Each structure stands twice: as structure tokens, then as C-alpha cells.
Image (cartoon, rainbow, N blue to C red; front, side, top):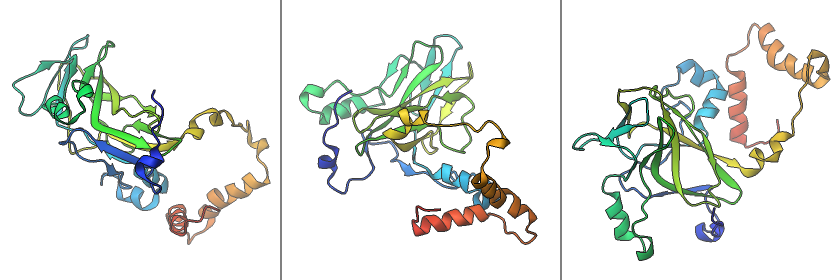
Length: 263
């Protein structure tokens, strides 16, 4: 990994948490993730389940830079195509259509010929790496978790691997790895439907901090504060004949509007 390049100096004092760089001009720009899961969340969940809304809205949607399809034979071979192609092509490493020339027309002379590949087949059967067409930089000590979109229907033809990129230190392609799960049928990717969700996480929370935890092995280990909280969140709503649905959701939304960090 290369060292961080003065991100605060580069972005200015009021730098955003993350800055996306669109390398492939045809690709759709990232979009703030939607609390309604791109309109697919059931209405009752959207109204009352704040945990689903919060998870759905956390981060940004990333879209495929072009519509394309993959076919895996179940062994070591993958072929691919895209709208306007002459047919299906064996996949080893493939450039985004026309991007190599575009990159070389703009890049400094010593960097010409080094445009990142769009697709690459790994040695492991059915494993394909996909580049979003984007790079990203984050504020110091912030990284990006790359994962499938939260609460959106998954592409049944593949499984996503998740990864954390320290984008404050590493300025490289924003990409993902997938494992194809269907054989001898096309697995399609839609440029108007998000295929990734990237979420900012502080480096401190995925390092040694996660080793700091305890487990209460039984009910006898609950103290007065836990029983008081249980009474408030579980018992009280069920004995109140006039209780309103979505109390947690309403309380959480009011707290966010006040920007009050204290419960």
C-alpha cells in the first residue's frame, strides 16, 4: 500500500468523509443509499422498523458501469458479453469497452498503458473480480466496507464477497469479487440497479476494539439496569392497550433530528 497523500490538503479543510473519482465516464455516479431499499421495502417495515431503514440507508449505492452478462461452465472457464458486442468473449482480464484509449489520452505519459481492467477471472473456479469504474478517497482513519446492497433482492446467479479497503491510504480501484453460483446460463448485471453498497467505518472499530466484549451466560447475570431496560422495551408496550406502533422508530427519528447523542 502507498502512504496517504495529505487528504486534508488535497480536499481542503472542510473535506467530505469520502470522495469518489469517476474514471469510466459512462458509469453512473454513486447514490446515497435509500432508507426504503430503493423502494422495495414493505410499507409496514418502512413505517415501523427503524433498524431496517437505518441499515438500508447506511452508505452509498454503487452501480455496474455497463450492463453485462457472465456465463460460467462450472469449471475454469467464464465467458462474457455486453450490449453492442459481437458475441461472447472468453474472460481472463478484460478492459471496459473503449476505456484503455480514453485513459491513455488523459493519463501522464509514464502511466499510459496501465488502465485498470474492468473484469478479471480468478484462478478459483467461478470467481470474478468486477471494477465499478470508480476510485475513492476517505478522510484519515476512515475505510470503506464494500458489500452487497442492504435489504435489496440479491442476484441469485452470484454471491458477493465483502471487503474493507483502507481508502485513506490506498488509492486504487473500487472493486468487488463475486462467486458465480449458476452454470451454463447468463448471469446479468443491470447498470441501473445497485450491485454494491459502500459504507464508511472508522479504523478503530474493526481492529483490536472488537476483542473487547463480554458475554452474560444466563438470566441470572442480568442486573437491575438490564431488567429495567427489558421492562421498558418488551413488557411496557405489550401491557399498554393504547400503545402506538413504531415507538422505537419515532423516538429514534426525533433523536436524530435533535442530533442528541444521549439516550
